[in-house]
Length: 263
Image 1 (spheres, rainbow, N blue to C red):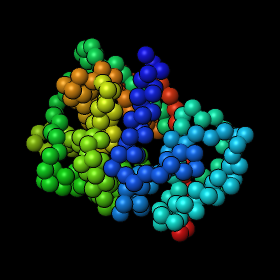
Image 2 (cartoon, helix red, strand yellow):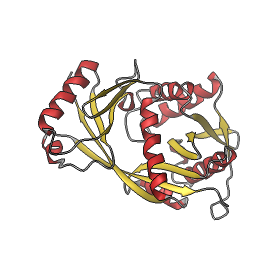
Image 3 (tube, helix red, strand yellow):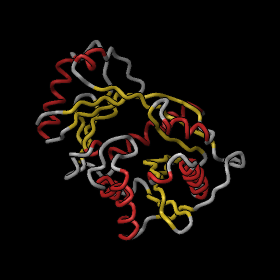
Image 4 (cartoon, rainbow, N blue to C red):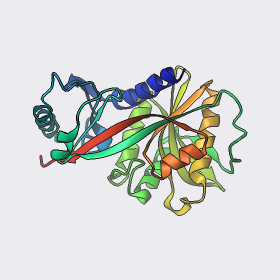
């Protein structure tokens, strides 16, 4: 069962980049580009890369992908190896790439969630322009996205709307005392629920609101008959600890590699 959950978590990551994007199989993986959003970190990504040391000159490979990203006019060369790809990545560091380890976590939600804290607020589905404008304003206030990348004055909210319009996920605002204080998205496929892009208003951080949003989303996922709940988080950072506090367990690791480019 755990191997199946791993596969579903990996597939959910692939779907996030792929759905709503222009995609091309290249360099042992797939490059996914959201037109007009190439300047966002998530708007141009090479992912699901399957390589081995025997048939790939990694220095040549890096030079080729950098050329492709420059041609697209993406300011950041960002890629993910498939979690099962095992190669010597020393050349990535030598070429100036930053390495961020992300942990995939899951929790079975088929049974009771009574071990988790009581929720004080509620989720509301974003289904009109007013909701999207509220979310965009939350991102503007935050400055940085859920993964630490620049929000480009709230443009990431417009990017997420594309993913929602393409039916990959649904987006929610988290309301408490009639005030929107957080946001989160949910993707569900084959009984597997994936949390995307948790965000808490800066004024309310450090007060347990993040946990409330995650738990609320677990309950929302159960309404859609999801049995497993998954997410990725940067290893040992606050979000990683938050998800563990919600009863989620580490199941795999993947590495984000990125480097700023001069186009």
